[in-house]
Length: 327
Ligand code: GYE
Image 1 (tube, rainbow, N blue to C red):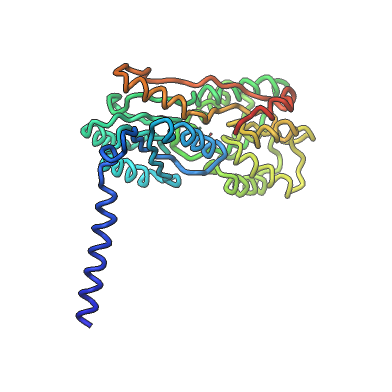
Image 2: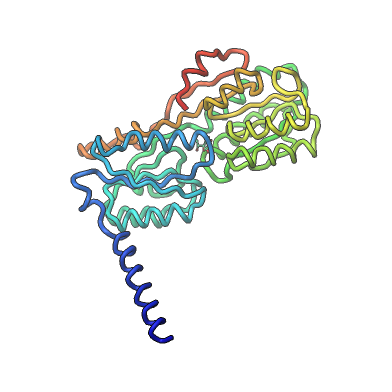
């Protein structure tokens, strides 16, 4: 018995030291001249996110001289912090962070800074009092996206004295949620007749979007607008509306305003099911690469870079625009 226990302990020790040693190996020194990029991704919750991951993978290839280490955090900040610590231990050359929420990054970014590893923030933003904790940020102006949606709502519902709005938010505390929600709030503050009947988070996923919409519909049958903070949740909401046999979109009844303008979202816009869709561009791979090139050349990239974005209405969109969409 004792022999077996000793053997087991030995086996555990050997296997632990094997994988532990591997994990802490400095990637940068063993990368055969490749530039090692550690990328902490939020998750795979939406079409937008999957397109963003693809863009990073297609950009940071071995052929182009990179080694990309990608960690999917399944929408959990703790997992992102653990990934960043692993990147620091492995001594990667650059860290790219797509932060799930805005708060709580300072300690780990301080560790990266002390280790001399530049950090590039992509997509959502972080909130910090110390801007030296990151080299550069590239992403969307989410508040402006919200403003674009609200402008359309103001024009479209000008005649209505009362506008009953159901608001489905994304992940609470993420920049995409915060900005799009602020945009709507400005509209509500400006228009006395606008009422937010109900608000809940669908976490940016289709499954949750359907669930939340079912709840909205069980509580309120008379909704004029669903302000839905991404296309995946809008697709879920459409399923819920269909199952409840309620009219929506160009058939009359409730109108959906959505964000991202992914191919699936634009198909629904062309079909008249989403009335207005604000674009959010996920193809950040080449933009991040451009930042890394500048850093390598000893230049200072712009601290903040916003991406240009368009918007599509069911009334104006064309088949060509849908087909041209790469994600
Ligand atoms: O709108 C949503 C995704 O942060 C811009 O996250 C991104 C958002 C995007 O899950 O679909």
